[in-house]
Every structure is written in C-alpha cells, then in structure tokens.
Length: 414
Image (cartoon, one colour):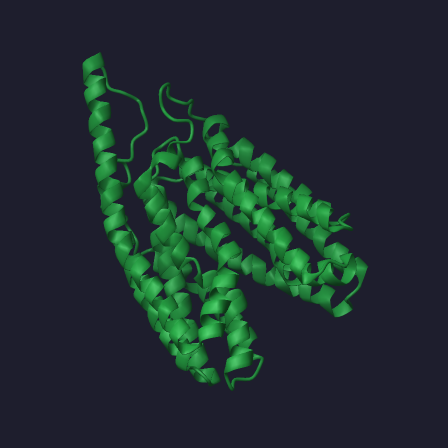
C-alpha cells in the first residue's frame, strides 16, 4: 500500500475516536465520574503541561530509533491512556490518566511528522500534511456524530462505549502505521547536543510566533460560542453553524490552499497574509451581531487558519535538519499544547472581558506575529548557512565530505 495512503488511513482512524471523545469527555467526567469543572480544567492543564515537555525527547527518540516503531508504540500508549479513563473514579487517577494520554499523544504527533518527513520528498511534505489535516477534520466530524449518540442516551454505558471506541481507534491506527516502510534512525553525532533544537534560537522564535497565531484554536472552540451567545443578537444555533462551516472548509479547501506554498519564501508570505486575514476576522467579529456578519467573519477566520497551517508546515519541516525532524517537530508542536493551556484564560479575559477593544488587540497580535515570521525565517536561513559553512570547513580539514545533518535541502528551494 502507498505509504501516504497508510498515513491517511491512520490519521482518519484515530481522529474518528478523538471526535467522539471531544464532544463527550466533559460530560462524562462531570456527570459519571463526578469531577468538578475546576478539577477537570486543572487536570487537563497539568496533563498538557507534561505533553509540552514530552514532545521533544520522544521526538528525539523517534529520530534515533526510527520513527515508525516509535510511532506505533506511542499510538498504543495513547490508546492505553484513553483506556485508563474507563477506570478513573477520582481526581488523582484522572490526573495520571491525562498525563499518560497527553504525553503519549504529543510524542505520537512528533513521531508521525518525522515518519512523514522520512517517507515523503521535501517538495511534497506540505501537500501531504494538508491531506492529513483535511482527513483529521473529516474524521473528527464523523466521530462527533457518534459522540452525539452517546449524548442522546446520556448513560454511563454510552459514554464508556465512546471511550472504548477511542481506545480501539488508536490501537487500530498503531496497526496501520506498522504497514508503512521503516525509516532508519540516525545515530547521534559525537559532540553535538542531545536535543539540538533547544539551542536553535531562530527555530524557537518561529515556534513562539506560531504559538501566538495558534490562539485561533481556543478562539473557535471556546470564545466564539461564548461571544455569540452572550454578546450578539444571533440565535444560539449560530455556534454550530460556525463550527460546521470551519470543519467543512478545511476538509474541502485545505489541500487547495496548501498547493500555493512551494518553498520557504511563499510559506513566509502565507503566514504574513494569514495574520492580516485573522486581523480582519477579529474586526468583523467585534462588530458582528447578526448571523450573516458572524458567518462572514468565520469565513475569514478559516481562510486565515488554512493559510497559517500551510505556511507553518513548510517552515517547520524546511528549517529542521535532516535526521532531527522528530525533536524539531516535537518542539514546534508545543505551540498547540501551550495554546490549549493559556488560550482559554487569555482570550476570555481579552475578548469577553474587553469586548471590541479586546478583539482589536487580538487581531493586532495575529498581524504582528504574522509579519514577524518573515525576518524570523531569514534568521533561521542565515544560521543554517553558518552551520553549513562550519561543517564544510571541518570536513575539508579532515579531507572528506561530512555526513552531518544540515538545514540546506528545503530552504534552497526558496
């Protein structure tokens, strides 16, 4: 089977389970387990904090041992984390289960990206990543429908069935991932830092800028529903319409948008434009009190999301050295976990608390982060060129070409 199709099937399988989990988990933990909303929020914050830390070393493990085997093991571990939720009956058990789930899922994401980088030529990685993102959204939509059935029955058995399905989805995904060709691990180079990404200042700056722009995620899932219900005249069903519109657009158009990103130059331009589009979306939302205006703002928001994703994928792959994709993707992925942790408090205070001025400030943050991405990428290219020059000089002194990993393959296309 084509490796890209295998990766797509694995993505679809796990995302269906995740979609069911997303729409039912909060009610399960409150109504069935008996946790308070504060305990759930605190447990998730602790768990995703661990996930933020775990991504880099687990990604490095994928680089060294080979991403396929590590991805399979972490998919099994993620399924085990979900399975642990089936027996959670107290807050300490909940925290332990969330830590296992979040840590394994963060590492799985890094290992899967390293696997993609090893199986797909550099020029095609962003397009394949777009296919996977579209598949992810489609799977979550299907899973959300399954979760809705559990919400309808509202029984312990229904919720437990959803968690069992999510657990099984990761175990099946592990089996699917085992079908792709193995990608050889790359031994560590003597004298190099074990986690080189932690010393890569340009890549850290790029990750920080991307994290700021990833605040659109809690904006969609948390702040917009509150804004629409509390601060506009639109009917409550507008919340569902906005979420459905977002999902459908990503499924239908993410791949088309990603085709326009061909190199680091176009990727930087896309991120810059994404910041402006997200800024415009915030301005329209701040004035939106009717369904039509809110849906227009939602269209701008999803366009900015798709442009940002396409550019960020190209940049994250292109500035990561060969043989270190796992740890670099693990570090880049910390932006998602940080946005999940900090976004709800920050955005509710900013948008729900301040209203229109808060929307303007948020939009300005998006625009500023997008504009700063271009010089940050140039900085990364300059540092890569210096690293390459030093490596070539050392190799010349030893009388042979080196085999070290350098960030020159992808950036040269820009």
